[in-house]
Image 1: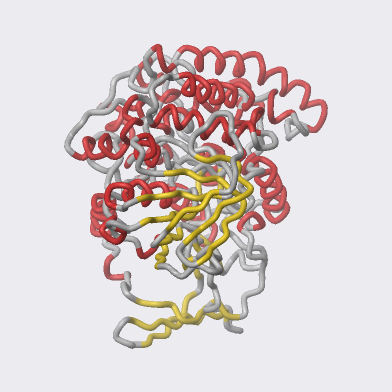
Image 2 (image 1 turned 90 degrees about the vertical axis):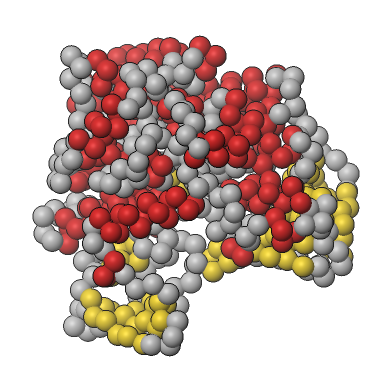
Length: 546
């Protein structure tokens, strides 16, 4: 972890459902989130079962049906434990992975070893990657390095943390939040991606509004972060098959717009080119797609940079060499809900292999944990066709996130949480129409994890209700200038889809194949939440009670 690391989603979307963080929604720094996790461990008396600074060196399923797990701590002390079940909750990021740079003779570092910009003070830096760590590190490096160039092979859209003027300098706005700045819910990105009302729109309407917004940002005459966001997102969509119809929904979009403030200030150069040739401490880019932030994209000639340091923000690779004898497909989209492995359903599960396109990994992992506990204690049973369901859902995700082939862990947060809540029996309770404030908040606020404690096993509805009391009825609805993604326009489109589009689709699909996916029908004819992701298809109750 590095200095000035902030969550890419608000604390309320990152919270566990039964342990709310203090105060109102905001982006918190890593230190504060670590403190939250420590409080969580203390509140639920978890520390006695935790073994820190300990490596799992081997795990094998023995003939007696139990797991033999071998560990070694930092002092070399070895331990062997026997377990009935094994949950691997390490996520999919294990061993640092670096891009090949043959011919390069300068210094380099992987993002996992990055701590602060002092590591590159006075140096000519090249950052490889286009994800969140690449954006943060490039932005930080721009303050002290002599020069910074960020290189990616292809254009992909970026997402801002804020939806208003705060996106001009995200870091300053996030730091202001730690000092008590009072932000409205509508100012956060999650208001346009995880609210029930946004999910009621059809994918076509949802994506058309996003593309419209990005093009409007380009029209802005100020060379600032929002303008650059419009440029890079529109360029990515116009130069990717299906991008104009489906906007950023086909990508694994990083919340990386923070770097755009540094780029607008002239601290970062952006190069999108397929080829980079290294010779000593020189790099020559060719087969350009884009240099800087031109719109439309303007391929350019070869260009050479002098560099002293390469920072590899190129992700990680998996290493399960310690898991001995287990034979299954290492693809989470072949596992039930990216967790339960065919052939090992009563012995093995994975957590952390659900990376929401919007939302937090902890919330998804918590829902899976609740379900696993019910399955393994006999309170619930897996669906009889769960293996086939896993295959079908995996195929749907592969098609939906067509440009995110390297990220099989990507899931759709609203659909995933809906699917898991139906399995667990903890679907959020829709407030009474006579409680207008709560009903409006239900549809226009993000689906924070606490919503999934309003009923069902271990329900604690007071958590979300206390949270909502901190906010006004209309805090989830942006002002007039934001109606492209929030407010009256979204309400209009959602109402049309709920009361005209969805009933018509259901009627026709019922006679076809009983409400399931109908080829391209998921795109234009029904609400985004029923696009078939994670097995969530429209049912009669969804038509009658949207």
